[in-house]
Length: 219
Image (tube, rainbow, N blue to C red; front, side):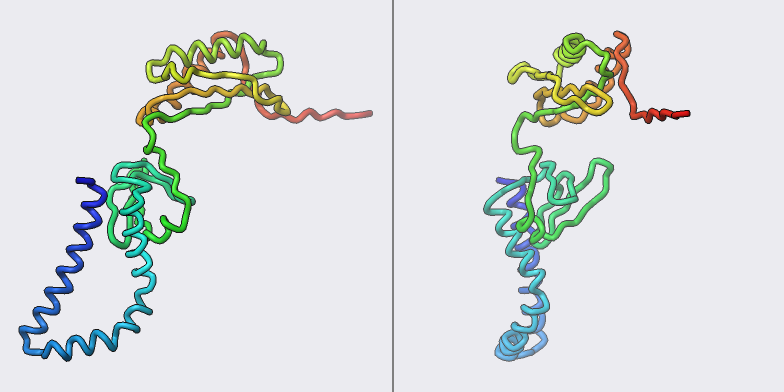
């Protein structure tokens, strides 16, 4: 059974049971059922108005359950927030960030926003840009980057790694490396390749430039 659907259904059933229990207790206390129904009916409009935000979140929770843009454990991004989905409730969805912060997101925010799901596909592409000095030999830089990337065990061979000179910046030549990996290896691979390629460039005397300002004084 889909754990995401189970989480939402459990929360919905729990809420319904609380309502039934409340009505039962009121009935046991001797309050006529007709009076209860009349009160609920007369208060319905006011409650609906007061809870329209909650009802919107409830409807959005059902939409998320049906459309399934994400599941428990997926790493998603919506607007300025991102994290792993740990709970999909009837009103709110809980995300946990890589630094272990819990974010409670109203379901309506997810259905009205754009959800980027980084875990939906098994593989993920990693792009890293390396800046080197203009005096560097293009083919040598490409060879070093490609050789280092291809040697990493987490880099997939299909699609094959790709490296090209992609921009002539104001103070540097910018090379873009593109490799594919399993989604779960993405961050470790990013850090590994950044460190390893920097070391390879240093070992071969290829410098990474920094912004500088030349001042010319005329006398």
